[in-house]
Image 1 (tube, rainbow, N blue to C red):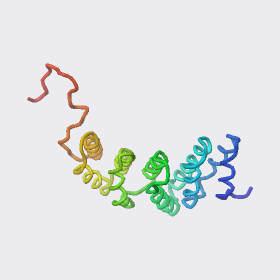
Image 2 (image 1 turned 90 degrees about the vertical axis):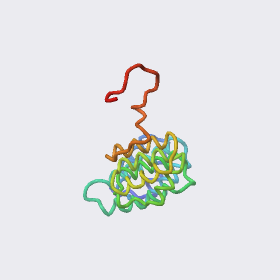
Image 3 (image 1 turned 120 degrees about the horizontal axis):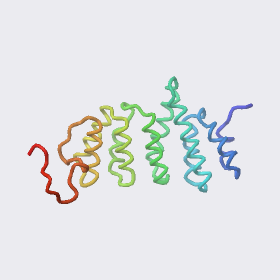
Image 4 (image 1 turned 180 degrees about the vertical axis):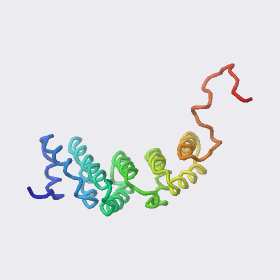
Length: 192
């Protein structure tokens, strides 16, 4: 059997037969980062089922590249995803998926600080980026969360503080929302 090419994958993903689409996206992993822009384009423009199949093919590539011993493939996939996450022509949900794909395989030192900082200010992506940085939890990711905390307000500031606490950074203010009473009580706090 001949190896799957990007052209053949795209053709199979556009099939009306869901089993053909499934068999195609399951084999997408070895195609690598070069296939991601075409798959993202298909995911952005096709009807729902074809779009889902293209998205699943992207995930297969990410998971294939993230396996032990595939450092070269992983780096190529990280670079391709880094370009996709800033492509504002893509639907917001697809960009959110790309953030999560990156969170699975990016190393802390590979995080682009300017991109991450701008995405932390984007109201449509900031929660996903916050959680992705919390998942990475390396020095660069923590520094980006701290910088965002200093500029954030309201609920997002509280969420950033929670992420930093998860990364073992002591944050006093704002307090954890889970520990702030939501209704009046006569129970006195312990230690006061």
